[in-house]
Image (cartoon, rainbow, N blue to C red; front, top):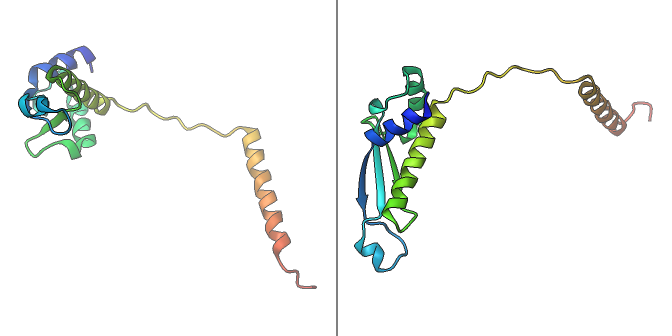
Length: 138
């Protein structure tokens, strides 16, 4: 996955729309369309192979609509431009993180000291429990 190609592809394929944002902001909120909504159809993304696209679909299943689109909203800032940049950044980060394959985990072995420490803790626990038992000869 080439991050630069992914960046260009997302910017080219995503559709942005603007609406009025809620929350505090005075008259600015009532007059200016600062909220950004980005829609990106997964099939329009270049730079992802089929395996990466399947992984994106699997990991982002709760964010994908029935039309195979990801929708991102940004309305934190009062500036439309800043909200647009934030929305693109979040969309790119989501797709890049979901497409990245996890590293293959090679299981390690506990050290001799760690094994000995675990066994010592088990012995102490066993002794503590044994001291609590009532002995039959008493």
